[in-house]
Length: 288
Image 1 (cartoon, rainbow, N blue to C red):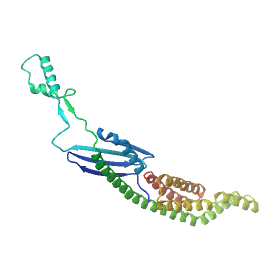
Image 2 (cartoon, rainbow, N blue to C red; image 1 turned 90 degrees about the vertical axis):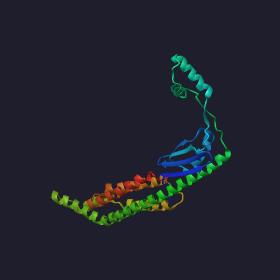
Image 3 (tube, rainbow, N blue to C red; image 1 turned 90 degrees about the horizontal axis):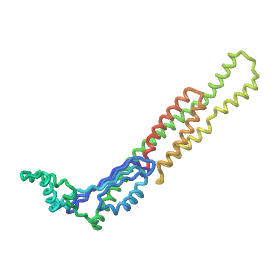
Image 4 (cartoon, rainbow, N blue to C red; image 1 turned 135 degrees about the horizontal axis):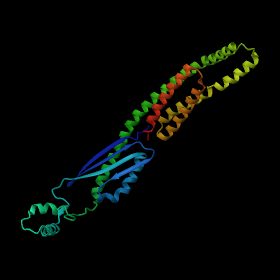
């Protein structure tokens, strides 16, 4: 079963002093393009997270984020009283008047460097273990999203392939009529020239010409490629790159049939096949 590269997963963990939100989302990309955002005190786990994301998601433009919302009454940031007082005194000296409003000075002082001091929070392994479980939950949600999208893509691919097969059957049914049309057209052109033609030589040249227009090999190969595409959709190892290569081969055979058609009704059927194939090409870029 195929997977889409588009996906989204989210998990929320409520701890005594904080709310941790984990989000992971992805879009299509030729390779793995990984962007990780997490608080600085979890940074030592970033490499581990990157490896897990890479092994699980394989491909896509992936954005992974951990957001922290503090819920406790206490905060790790406190006012550095000595520094703020020193700033206020310096501001008074600059103003050089006793009428300065301390509130205004305080508002300016707290904006100065080091007015607030933040105690660096150390990584709690027990807390990280709980967060890691939530990361795995978000990834499971992401994979399920990708599988659901993959099911929709698979149904669309099968419909498009079925349509191409129907147009190919139309091409096959028109082949004998096309040959008769080419023969009659050539004979009519010779008759209009009112020239004496060696009938044996004419038939030899006609056979040679018709051999160049023969599409039997293309029909067989196109049928084989279409069946191979459908078979590949059902395998567990199915992937977008391999399906993309098969689509290229399908396109090559359709183009060759179109160049050899030389018959308007057949060329119309070829155009319809190309139209269906373009729709497959658009969607195949989103397959993992």
